[in-house]
Amino acid sequence: MSHAPTGLALYDRTADDAAAAVISRYSTSFALACRLLGPRVRPHVRNIYALVRVADEIVDGPAGDAGLSRDEQRRVLDALERDTLEAIASGFSANLVVHAFARSARAGEITADLVEPFFSSMRTDLDVVEHDEASHAAYVFGSAEVVGLMCLQVFVNADATPKGRPDEQLVDGARRLGRAFQDVNFLRDLDDDAGRLGRDYLNGAADAARRVHVLDGIDADLAAAAAVIPRLPADVRGAVWTAHHLFAELSRRLRATTPGAPRVRVPDAAKATIALRAMMKAREASR
Image (cartoon, rainbow, N blue to C red; front, side, top):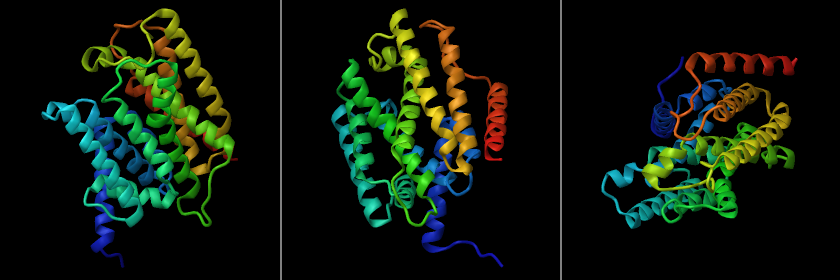
């Protein structure tokens, strides 16, 4: 006979539900990929991305819209980082999204060496509006590559005994997939970033030649990541292939557009087809 959770178990479930709600509101593509993950890792990936989204919103508009100055946004972001690190150590936070992330960090052995670079990149958004190659690389490492590494940690360690660090090939693949996702989104949001936020993440990607250079880098990163996806645990391969193929399709569509065009997206019907093909690919590889 099953019983409704109480105490910490109820709080944990409520925190996971809060994180899932954040993701469902902010990213239909990511929510689709999450649904394709096995139950062993699905809540953990949602929890990671929920914290990432909340931190991003502090520096990307909503906090400013609420009247917070840059200094106040920095204080809120710093407090969120402290709360996150303390929750990883203690196993509890009064902030439901932080609590959910901390649970997943403990399950996946995500430590400060991944959390701190992420918050460092978020702070960069409060001060830096134009990036060169070096600052872009540093920003993308903290804002996207470490998020890929956080997900890899839970792919490998959730419910595993003993836990450990993924090998270097998987680490490189996770970093490059995260980098490709971030640069695709930078290209998709080029006009909004420049007009609303006054930021240039890609060092002049409105220029045609620079845009092609960025897309070539994205496609190279996607190809490198694809080479290691078959080595991921079976219960995550279909979801990762789906995310990979969705962003490959976005890259293809970006090549056919120019700056100033409507934001590039993949229609829902095409997303469903991509997901079906990716899941079939993952199943065939597991036989």
